[in-house]
Image (cartoon, rainbow, N blue to C red):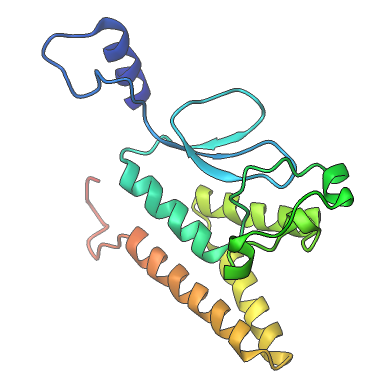
Length: 183
């Protein structure tokens, strides 16, 4: 209904309805169709094989979801063409995001495409509303790091779990009177 209203207002330009008359459309989250896919914000749907999630009613909601994803799952944000040939030639160097721990440097082959695909699968499950795979992954990694006596790394996973719990608490609404309620 939101998309239909948006397209009709842009096409018919009604005189008194000024809410959606601008050139903006609803925001979407896109997982690009490329090697080592990026997760980004967009307002344009391009049928290029990318996965789109949305539309979101406000940009603030979309940004909070993207911030949560970036906080929990380390993904690349650079716009480099990470084809296997260029990575093998050593054309790229790790950026600041790698040194901050926000990316695992697939540009320098420090992260395989299979590992990155697992991270993208976690992002897809979050965008579909299923947080259980992310929670189990973070718990497993935290226990693995603690078992290897890497307590700083385990603490990072614990903080990511706390962030996940906080996000989940905001997104769940429970009523004690679910018997005969209109929602």
